[in-house]
Every structure is written in C-alpha cells, then in structure tokens.
Image 1 (tube, one colour):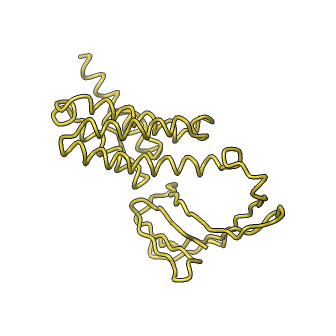
Image 2 (cartoon, rainbow, N blue to C red):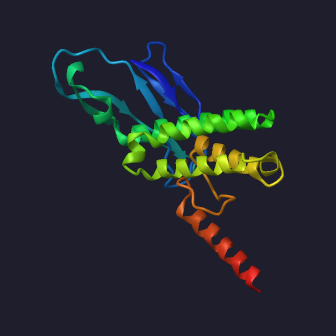
Image 3 (cartoon, rainbow, N blue to C red):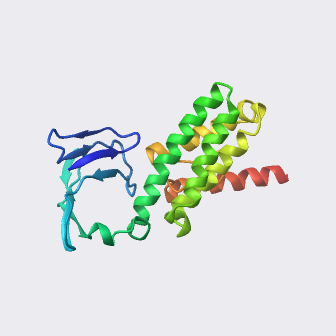
Amino acid sequence: MITQARSGLYPNSLSADKSTLTVSFSNLYPGERRTVLVKLNLRATENEISQQVLLSAQASFEAMSQRYSTPNSTCLVNRFKNSDLRIDSYRCIPVDAEVNRLECNEATQLALKLADEGNLTAAKAKLEQTLEIILGSISFTERDESVLALVDDLRDALRVLASREEYTSRGGRAVMSEFCSSNISQRSSCTKAGKRSIYQSPMSSAVQDKAIKSKSMTSIF
C-alpha cells in the first residue's frame, strides 16, 4: 500500500485503493531524469523472504507528436524479520539522499518565508538544524554527490542570511530562491554563484563555463 508520495513541483495522484500512483512531468529534455520518493506500508513477516516484488513502474511520454510507453520495470527486495533489521545498515543511499533533498528544500522554503518576515535568526536556526541532520546522514557519510551539493547550498544560504543587507541588497534572496527552484523541479540551467549544479545538463554546464571564462577575460583587459 502506498501511504505517501513526494514529487516536489510535479503533481501526483493516488488511486482510491492506494495501489497505484501517477506522477505527471512536463517538458523534459533528452537525458533528464526525475526522482519521486514513495512511502509504502508493507505487511509484517515472521521470516526472511528473498526477492519479493515490491512495486512496478511504467512510463508513457510523447515526443514529436508520437506516443510511447516503456515496459514495466519491477523492483525486487529482500525482507527481514524486525529483530534483524537495522535502519542505519539497510537504508538505501539514493533513498537517503532523496529524503535529504526534500527536507532541505522544505527547510529553505521556510527560511525564505521567515527571512522575508524579517526573522533572520529563526531562518538561520532552521537551516542550521537541517544541515546538522544531513551531516549525520548515511548518504553524506558515503559522500553522495547530490548530498555534498546540498550541504554546499545550505552553507551558501546561511552565508547570505548573515545580515539584512546581504539578504536583500546583495542578491542573497535570489541565491536562496534559485536553490529552492532547482531542487523542487530537479532542473537547473545555470547558477548565480557560477558553480555547477547537479541538475545541469552537460550543455548548460558548458555554456555557463564559457560565460564565466568570457567575463574573466573581460575583467583582465
């Protein structure tokens, strides 16, 4: 049974019997991918079960006015007795990274709201709390690339919350808004800070690098 789905910017709908989830994505470019976090409620088991079917997924899309569908993709898992299960040992790193991304985005959205209301102290406290949680996660310990990027973004957000002037007059709010936008949509074309985003395509990264080099050459002359 599906109990929860978190798909960020993209709408999702759950069937009445909670067995089927539909997520709608629009205007994806070739090579892009999207991640959805699904929470399931599984029946308890008295004994270890090998290779139980957990879920299956299918994608349908339209390209050049033609409709396509992918074959069903099935996920198999091992199930363990509660007495043998340790969450810190068995949690999948990509799942942990996705949890971190969603929590980070929600924290940044709240921090933006608090900062806009003039409460920079509360905004910083929320981001510091989230940063501490992420630094203690297994995906950070294993140096997952996306989580390392989240940590960098959180530290950048804390930097721009250092003062009201930094936040409102020196582009701090724009940096935090960009952070939220790229994470909730899982897409980034360029970054104001000039660093590469994990959601950039090779083409957008190349364009950004070219623009940065052009500015550097202009400043030299």
